[in-house]
Image (tube, rainbow, N blue to C red; front, top):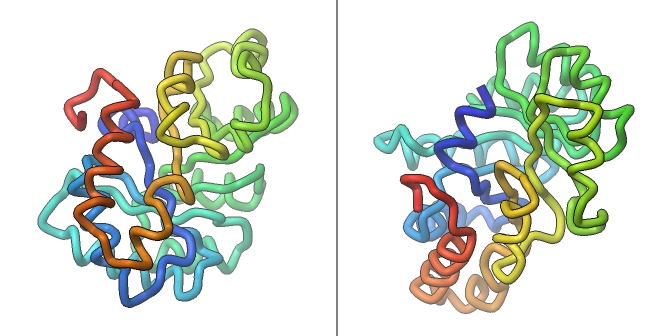
Length: 214
């Protein structure tokens, strides 16, 4: 399921602690910049409610998917499910979350870094994983994982920005997640949403994916 989502929307906007009063404006700006996948971190203030609000905001645009990130505890799993998250993400391997999503057929992008992490995800049937922190790992680390774990694919999260986004796809990642580098903070603080939209648009263009989203 995650592979199909990423085929349609290979860039995920990570929203962590976006001010509540700016949520819809921020989301709409990112959408107009060309991104169709959103992750709301569950450890943000009022994370579940922000998921509900974004899903309501984009209810007439079915191509937009809103997921829950940092889903690492039983409570967060239940809260994310009740909020209607389209998919879950974790920063590391959470066996409870693996079981929870498999039992309920919820799309999950589990976070991995080591071969042991990958092996555990494969035990639960997950072949698409989030490599985190991708920006801190050697450029060919993905090849080291794909060698013994054939059939796996990875999404790069951590350290991705407009200048290096294309390099991750060139290395073989099928998607990327971008949080703090998505929009310059001063644009948000000063309400310069037109500039923010074009910044996101330039990032999407720099990614250069062969995808209708672009």
